[in-house]
Image (cartoon, rainbow, N blue to C red; front, side, top):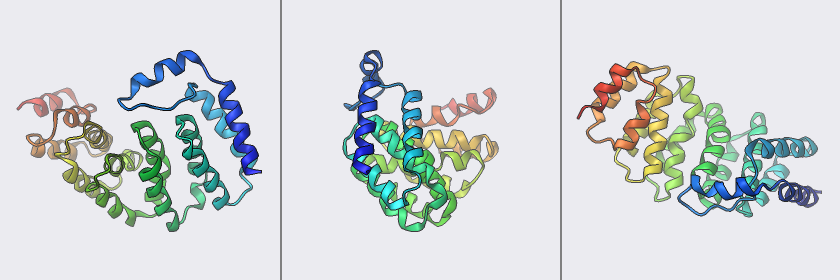
Length: 236
């Protein structure tokens, strides 16, 4: 049944292709991306419709189907896989972490895949099992740019709730001088989200480190601060 469902999904995706969307997709990425060319709202509906058909399956079977979708390298199939994984968040256990880490290493090859997986599935996982924030910190030393970005963007949603403040500063310390702009944007975004609940602490962190912080990260980090604080942060 699993292979039949995947075939149906792929047929639905092919029939939903929009040439205009396909032609404009590449401009959001520096890397070559493999896409059908479908608006996100339509992919979301397809993901939900087919999850309703398979939700009675056990977690292992669904994760196996997710992996098969990821192997295609299509952005839309990856989106569906990560949506399904997030839909299973109530059933996560600690044995799932190596699988998520492996997905980043094997299948994540652009910022959109990284953020879709990490913002939701991995972020929810770390909220449930906080000790794995130490694994995120270890990712900051990886040669894989997507693991380094993942170390920051996994904590975006927890940061909006004001969680993991000390851990976030520790991760940002490790990424502070990273030369990859997508990693810089990742930890800058993380600081921006944390500033919504811990404005003073984030501003102090930025002022302490702004001489070493790349301009890209700095601009992201200060985006939600009041204008007077932004002006202070931008002064060299």
